Length: 330
Image (cartoon, rainbow, N blue to C red; front, side):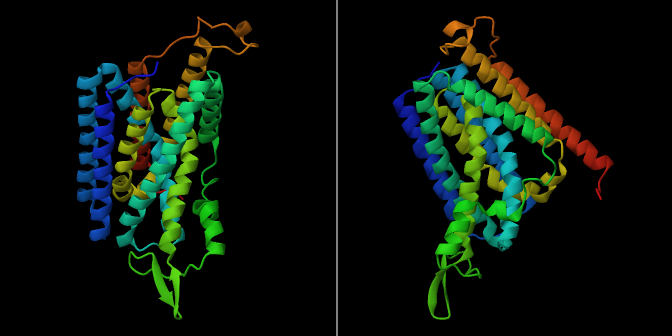
């Protein structure tokens, strides 16, 4: 069921989130540096507390169901965003971005990603409203993605060329783009000619590559809530902490090898949940004669939240235990 919240609350939330994002971008631009682990940890804690405060306000304004769906969606998006970090590492290495400018690059890339995801969310909400059977498609896609995530060989999708993204490759061949960075500026002068710096391609690569990850994360969160406002808010809070998580964990993430299985379990669970929801509202003629399937089980928001938290906790703990027992892999 679509959940309605007061217009003033949704508008005010968007305004505050917009100001926070702009403030974060200005800070990254004015103070280019490599954050220390302590600084990164404090910022991550700040965004986590901010998300929990938002959930508390949601609870008081719209009730426990709204708050529960937001938290479940936020944790889902945060979990699925871990995959983004692997590609962010590749992109930064591919373009040899100076470490002190990586904060700004990530921030701009995340803002691009939010714009693209916003478009996806609007399209997804429209499809759900117009076609009840779309959950069959979403569920099947998430199950396929879960299987691929679990059984994909290490490094299979991590080529440097793939990290750039098709849009960046196209622009690289059709625009005048130099090979040298000019601080955090987007243009420079080479042999008397004004050219763009590689930072432009970094921004575009980060934003458009995230679009590929949104192909599974957006259907996944629609399996938790039908509210576009909650879907977008969860995405904003998940991506806001992603930049600092990149600096805190960095290459350590590549060693947490069981995380991908945790993500696969979450995707599979939500995929099954979507299929069951589609069965409850079934109108497809060749399934049960076009009638609803009443026996299909239903999963509450609390159940979804428990599955997400427990799955990621087990996957992370197992990865850390293995890393401690087998610190070096040949």
